[in-house]
Length: 595
Ligand code: GDP
Ligand code: MG
Image (tube, rainbow, N blue to C red; front, side):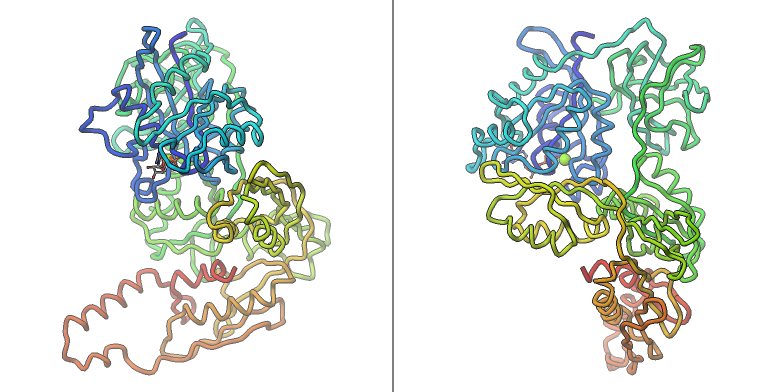
């Protein structure tokens, strides 16, 4: 065990984690050169297209160090985006150390700090790595100082490297071997293995990534899932090199996979402990904190025939993504679907995209909301995550909205813009400190404002230089109201929004206008009204369609006619009939576009 090193690579997004992983794999010859492609670990299509890492990935490599010994390195590449910090902390639970990769040109950013603190809290040895030293703007000395100043870990003598050109990669490996402690564990104790991640593979059933703490597990053993007490025969155990490779055994201190013919998707929950069926009285390992979603939205199949397969897909996806929450929801406008909870907007986009691509579903998403605590006059507190659950105005004694602490790092020249933005979003400043050319500023902000367009606004107002980390802190009383939308006098539940009273008039008006733009003209006039309770705050009309679109084509050009018809048909795919009005998907997300 003394030659095993388990570590994660953590960083702010784009600082080079995945590229560094590639280089480590290449250096240790985990893959032949012809198999090597950029960002091998980002195996999902979405990850490759978007150039971001979503799921944590593990790789086992053998490294022959300068001391002549061979070390088994198990490393886990983790996502860096703010929505996926949960994945990061899960990966860290399997490790003794972490490489904190910092872009030597860019310097410390918000997730550099947040991820590093998570690692420190979990008692990991954190090693700073200055990456991208090949860039002309790289300034490793300034960035080392920044790391010490803002984060407070030792960064003098931090390894410098370029994951792109390959400079310094061996130094990174030596640093790992010398400074990250080997795992502690007892091979003779009964098996205890922590499930770091589980996913459903159509050919192999449930695959679980585990960290073995004590004992060992072999092919053919009978394992027991501690929380459920269910037993399964182990079909395969092994490691990722990064290819899935059978080894027949996993021992204390190691990280690898177990396949045990588990077909039932909740059979191997993330954070659970695995032991052997004949082991009596084994303690469960500390699992993972169940995290609460921050954003909720309704997801509805465009065709109601897809409801069953949609439910099935959510079940499978949630095994792979423990942070995804869902429960059935029925909407008078959209029919049967699910209320889903997400960690943030990016998470929501990714889940919708995965459902559509991997499970071939057409879905309508309703506007996201946060959850509110509502105290009614009879003294009960209701937790609601959808505007339609809001009690009648006359019954409400108090509405409490979620507040988060937002930590922002921004170069001084953009500080003014950031402060203006935070004030516009009802923020209260709680701290500010200067670190060289960077300013660390903290705000208490309503979660509802942060999860919408805050991140994009922050980026554009700072030319991309400001970075953000946020965490829920508390519920706080706020004057929130529900704005309803009526189409031809009919309330459409899926278009309602909750917003602060100060913004309700202007947002109601903007929403009505936006809907007017988005709803295609139909054979009759469509009256759009925004109302609060019984008060109409905005009113506009989509005029009826006068001309037949096809009539414009003079009957001559057949291919053009066909194209037009095809276009209409494709558009229809995402249309939902609400009463007698046809609504496009965009209409349900109009709220996002009115900031
Ligand atoms: P991640 O989000 O932390 O996984 O970052 P990636 O590995 O995806 O890298 C983000 C971008 O930085 C990519 O375009 C990489 O090619 C680039 N990059 C990574 N390492 C280096 C480096 O050492 N030097 C330079 N010049 N670019 C790098
Ligand atoms: Mg990456």
